[in-house]
Length: 507
Image (cartoon, rainbow, N blue to C red; front, side, top):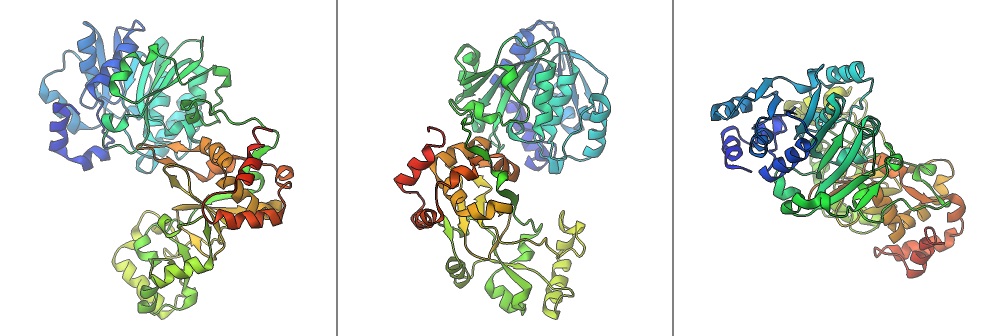
């Protein structure tokens, strides 16, 4: 962070910066991005999220006579920049970029706001404008950065260049398919560079960050995927061999692109692999909207005078499960430790004790939370069945998969698998596959990478993951599976079982 941006940060505080998604571009990155877009021959550059003018300053240092324009929605940060007196002819409008249509630009460079879809205020109006102007329908999960990128691609003049630095999670998401489709249809996607030094660049951001280079011309060569582990390596990255180089016709918008940052991580080709949705589906855990109210310890249940039928067993934190097999005895251990493992399920009508607790919750405002205010009544949670397989929503150094033999439900720390049709017959064998080396490598192709090596799995990522077909799993009879399950209690499979799963991709 420069001295100027540090002064601004001290003036307004982190909360306001987060409110507007303000995370400032380091000077070396800004200069590199501007240099690339100017190399396309443009004499005018536009920044849709001007902020403190990092790209404007870089343009002035790199070339004389470059006309610079920008947009900025936050009057406070714009006033702070103007007070510095470095305008140098820049034309910066105070406006919401996502609501300003009808312009074209020969060069665009941007560090868009980093705000997730939950903070995307007024998105219904914005999405309606996208449908009107671009003919694309955006998912409700689209974040602001992805919307900025999509709009900028549409506003680039023929032959123009665009450089964006933004979170890369959209490369692996369903909502990102629209953005990827537009990039492939409208021009040449030169390169995507993942910054593994994201903490050096953006210390306050917990997400994977990368630079995207795009040109408005017919595709002539493959898209290159790079990984940069040091900021000083960015200067020469385009002169080095990429991790992967993928022809545009092989880049499919509906597929996960983050895997292209890893060498040799194309999906295995095997006639014996099918989507996991063949057997059933993963869904997110129960979202209470107010864990402090709904999640109870056994001692609290007793103190409140709640009847046994007014609470249900529930895994509320990932750390409550230690081993790959979770049983009723393990749940009883948590109860004896007075862990928070019960979920309120008030009757209809609630008992006197439950009604008293509900009134206490209302006095503390729990009924006005984001999720609770849309329920009727607010304390009624969704009904679920215990899931026989649990899968950790977040991971570092490999995901967490659990064979659940208990009657405990689960909150959002885990996704729960519910078999459908014949899928119930294969639960044990699917679990073994997910625990295996081959399973881990294959399923990990669908992970969404965030900062600091944090991976996140969404239910649909898992449902699309490749697993063995029923015909292949029939090679492993139920008796063998039962023996191996006991072995798996220790967190790994036997060498014989690992070798069997290896034949899936190396027959």
